[in-house]
Structures are given as structure tokens and as C-alpha cells.
Image 1: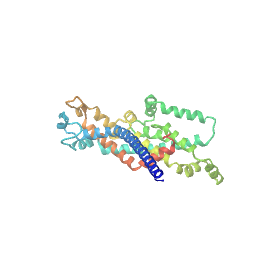
Image 2: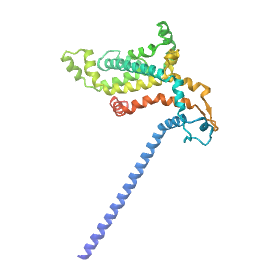
Image 3: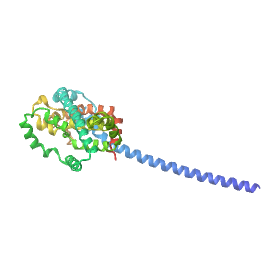
Image 4: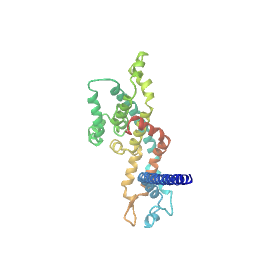
Amino acid sequence: MNKNISLTRRFSKKITMIKNINYDRKKVYEFIVNFLIYFLLIDFAFVFIFPFIYIFTNALKSPYDLADISTKWIVRSPVLNNFREAIARLDYWNCLKNTVIVTILSALGQVLSCSFIAYGLARYKLKLNSVVFGIIIMSIIVPPELLVIPLYIQYAKMRWLDTFLPIIVPCFFGMGLKGGLFIFIFRQFFKGLPRELDEAARVDGYNGFSIFFRIILPLSKPSILVTTILSIVWHWNDVFEPSVFLSTPEKSLLAMTLTNIMQNRAYLYITPGGEVISPLAMAGSLLIILPLLLIYFIVQKQFMAGIERTGLAN
């Protein structure tokens, strides 16, 4: 009897040891997997954060730091004069006002027009729907540089040059920057909405316009948010169209004036290591992207949720 008890105890001890070994192996495996995941996430995060660190560091450098070959990332004598001069050289407050007007009106126009066009493509079965949608998708591929000459001639005849109209008005007709992409976003979202909503509304006496503005559009908050943010970002950073259609300094946008500073050799410094740096341009870049960063941090969660619901994350 004692022998059986001792054998049972030895057997249970061996089983316990095997379980502990398997548990330790599992913990080691989980640790390695988590370490690799976090390592990759930190690497990817650094790829996106690095430009901001580079811009911020060089924006604080004085001529003394630029001439010192040992000064790379840690600024010994940071200065804020670059930001003051950037505000003056950019004509920051006037250009900021112009940029806000253009971006807000353009985003509003694209939300209204692109959602309305997408509603017609998603809800009404017409013979040319596939052809029209194919043309819209093709417009995403065509670069705006190919269309600028006929558009410039057209707007010159309409006497729209040196005004904000060539940038804003097309957005209210489903055009503008990436208009085809926004139509695609809304169409994909509308196709996911049940058609019973339209049928129930028609039973209650609603027509197509009433259904769109009273039922469909209020349900499209994720698509509206994604389209609004993307439109604001692209119009805010656009240099090509404003440079073509605007000529007077009083109507310049922030991205235009920053480009002029970056191309001015008087603001460039060549470090002892042979690197060409413009602290003034770096400070101006921070001032320009700061409003966009504030908007993103405020609506970050809603923006990511909108990306998932509109199907862009698939």
C-alpha cells in the first residue's frame, strides 16, 4: 500500500513538473511574440514620427547650432526667433484666413455634391450607372496637371483667375481634389444601407430629395466625417492649383508661401556635414500643420470609426 502511495506521489510530481515546463514554455513564447509585435509597432511609429522630430529640431536651431557639426538632434541653444520670422514671412494670419475659407468651403461643397451623386448611383438603377461610375473611378487616376491647361483657358474666359472660385466652385459639382474618391466612399456606404428605409419613407410620402436630406444624409455621419477631414487636409496642403489660379500675394494660401520660402536660397544653410537646412521653412511647416494636428487629435476616434464603416479599411 505504501509503495502504491509513493508511486502515485512520484507520478503526480512528474505530471506537475511537465505542466510547469509547458507553462514556462508558453510564457516564453508569448513574451517573444509580444516583444516582436511591440518592436514592429515602435519601428512603424518611428517612421511616421521621425519627420516631425526632424522638423521640430531644425526649427529651433540657431546659426551657431547649424555651424556646429556635433549638433544633430539635441539643440544646445534653442531659439524661437525662427517662428516669429516665419509668421512675418508667411504673412501667416492673412494666409491662414484665406486657407481656412478655401478649405472649409471646398470640403462643404464636396460633402454635399459627392454624397448626392453617390446616392443616385447607389439607389437608382439606370442603364448608364456602371459607365458613369467607371468614369468617376478613372478620374481618380488622372492627375490634375493634365487638365490644368483647358481649365485655365475656361476660367480665364469666365474671369475667375486670381480668385478662389476656380478652387471652390468645382467642389460643388463633384469635382475638386479627389472628388471621384469621395463619391466612391459615399457610394460604398449607401450600398450598405437597407433599401427598406427608402421604401418606408416613400410610403410616408417622401420624394427622392426628402429621403436623401432627411434620412440618408443624417445616417452618413461616418462618411461625412472621413470626407470632410480628407478634403480639408488635401486642400490645406495643395500647392499646384492655387499656384496656377492665384497670383496676388493678398490671396495667397499657406502652402504657396511656404513653397516660396523653401525655394529662396537666402534662407538656406549648409551645415559642416553638407546638409542643406532651412530653419525658417521648418518653423513655417510646423505652423502650417499645427491646425491639422489639432483637428486630428480632436476627431481621431470618430475618424478611425468612419474609415472602418465606409469600407476603406478592407
